[in-house]
Length: 214
Ligand SMILES: C[S@@+](CC[C@H](N)C(=O)[O-])C[C@H]1O[C@@H](n2cnc3c(N)ncnc32)[C@H](O)[C@@H]1O
Image (cartoon, rainbow, N blue to C red; front, side, top):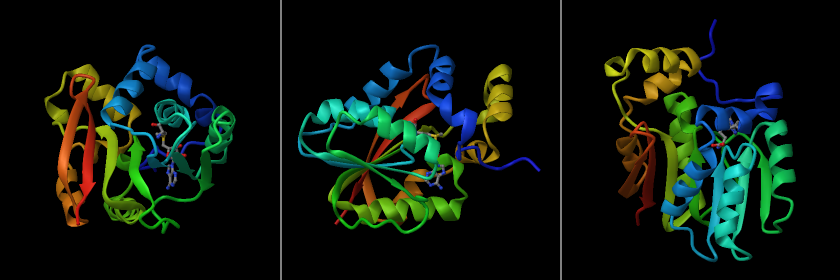
């Protein structure tokens, strides 16, 4: 049976994850992530939690903006991803990593100004998406922002045939379902609001900012 999710990445896939992203975005991944991080409005002293932190590439971009101030914590379940991330971020003293499933309770309570999750939320069943969002909510200070970088909502059936074929062929079933999910509504149920949206890659990808209200 085909797996409904492709986000748990180990072995060859983990070791070549960055290269795969570079090839998919024809060498533009670094510029793409730098732009997204710019939109996140990172400030000196921010405390940032990255859920599903992967190879640590995105964290390094955030750390460049943070300078010597603030902290970043990356959480991931893949030992191979964590090994790469620890190595890549070893020059920075204010970053740490935790090996843990992000849909299970996390040991953080109102200690982060930003929570970030990129290309990971789409791969969870809805019940676990709710758990991840609940974890982000608890980890944030009131007024903190949950930044979600992932597929935008769009109708896959109306896309150009080769795109439709490639998406269905290479992405998981849950990713296709994510395209029609009302994510803002799900976030609002948890107490998020004041949404901010930035669209990239011909609007197929969205950086959605959701503020923890109250
Ligand atoms: C598609 S990759 C994205 C990595 C990174 N966020 C990026 O944008 O480059 C998904 C990441 O989430 C991690 N992951 C998948 N399921 C997870 C889970 N249940 N708990 C924690 N991490 C998970 C994987 O190990 C992988 O590093």
